[in-house]
Image (cartoon, rainbow, N blue to C red; front, top):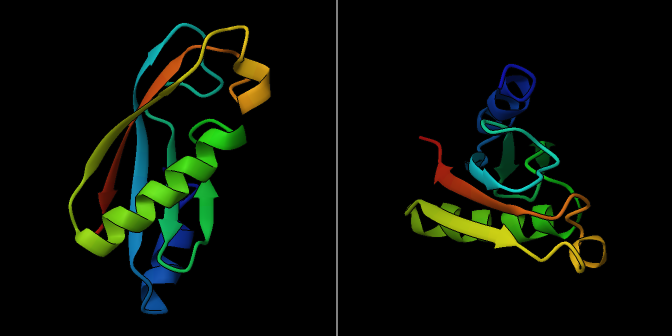
Amino acid sequence: MRDILPNIRAWQAQGKSVALATVVRAWGSSPRPLGSKMAISSEGDMAGSVSGGCVEGAVVEEAGKVIASGKPSLVEYGVTDDLAWTVGLSCGGTLEVFIERLG
């Protein structure tokens, strides 16, 4: 979290809204450990990582909705091991990510 705090503070100082995405559950193999965080600004800036590949693009999209509505979201991303490489989950498995707007 410390590595993304400077980004969060800078974006907020610039008047941007910020969402925080956190890996809260993982099944099978996961490229990032539980507790991994990614911050997303209302302008689409990103800092940190929750997975990689297409999952992060989907998290950014969901974060935009969370920023707009102010309502947190719990989302699950996962694929079979056979499809993992094609969609960006290089290790297969499933991730559950909690996304919240920061005040």
